[in-house]
Length: 417
Ligand SMILES: *[C@@H]1O[C@H](CO)[C@@H](O)[C@H](O)[C@H]1NC(C)=O
Ligand SMILES: *[C@@H]1O[C@H](CO)[C@@H](O)[C@H](O)[C@H]1NC(C)=O
View 1: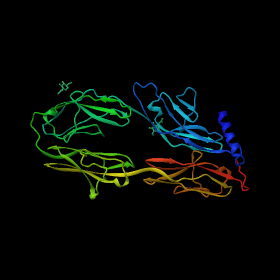
View 2 (view 1 turned 180 degrees about the vertical axis):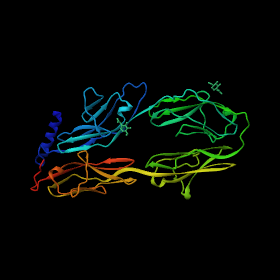
View 3 (view 1 turned 120 degrees about the horizontal axis):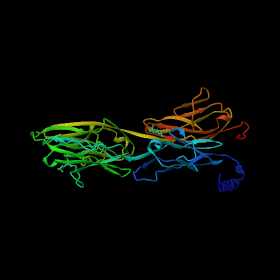
View 4 (view 1 turned 180 degrees about the horizontal axis):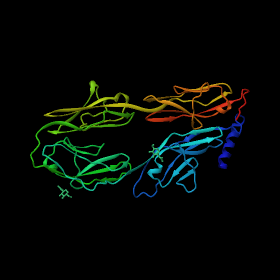
């Protein structure tokens, strides 16, 4: 430890005077925990490094270890990992070895605590592999789908299509639609002016890089024109979509047909749309900002033209990662007594609970240790039970950690370290 810090601690403790002995141990408490990182990998990038931060207070000053996907990272000379204080720095990042879940552990003589989980992702966008695409032949009045087939990537993508040559892009209207989920281009009803070459442009929103696919020529067949026909929905949203609290959800819906179908949106059973949704502006895309529990339900998209109509439905389900509502507090108990620690979190779906002691999972033991609805009971305390305890509340959308210390004291009231 640094002399300066020790000095300050001693000065502080002499201030506290008779309240605390200068050797009173203090449990480790996180003051900084690692956060998730998405690292944008550019082909030209030379400094490929990230730092996860971690800092804990306590006395004696905590020491640190790190885990990647539940295995400890061994500090080795000349490795790509370097440790400074509680921080972990990784250099020469590569997606095969470094992508995963990181956690920091801080320990002193009173026990060990485990930090929240931080993920590392590496965002990238490869080039298209196919060199050439064969022409797509359609009749005048027919509907068509041009596939984008984006290359391997990590990170959100956006899509657009070049018509013939840059900078002429396909303009979206009631007849033409570009799906931001698949990148495909839909033309409800082809007109002679649509003939030409179409190139999909893929942009990674994290790395900001773009790549172009091979052009697809669209040609008109000369064996007659297509008559009018009823709408057929080609772009639709999944039957069930889980949406987190506060997220913005976008539902896509687009139909082929002649005449070009119009798209409208409904909520089933007559439930009105939330006021924040502009249904009139939503043609092929319905956007619901800041999703709340009352926005959950069944949504319907209807495509209509003079020949008929086609509808699809999908359910938006609300979910929320766990948030703590009741945290265990530090406790001091005499030998032979018992402790009950409550731990509660709100979440949808309902959270499950487990407990850690000094960073390791606690297994229930008959007549000694039980976890019921999140509450931990330890009976017949011994000095061995002292340490740092953490409640973990989780559902499939997230996980939260709390921590608290258990001190076990002799019956006479003396503190036994
Ligand atoms: C960590 O786990 C994730 C998910 O299982 C996996 O994709 C990743 O490759 C793992 N990372 C390492 C370094 O093993
Ligand atoms: C489409 O691309 C091909 C090959 O590059 C070219 O021969 C053709 O003239 C292009 N068509 C149009 C309408 O630009």
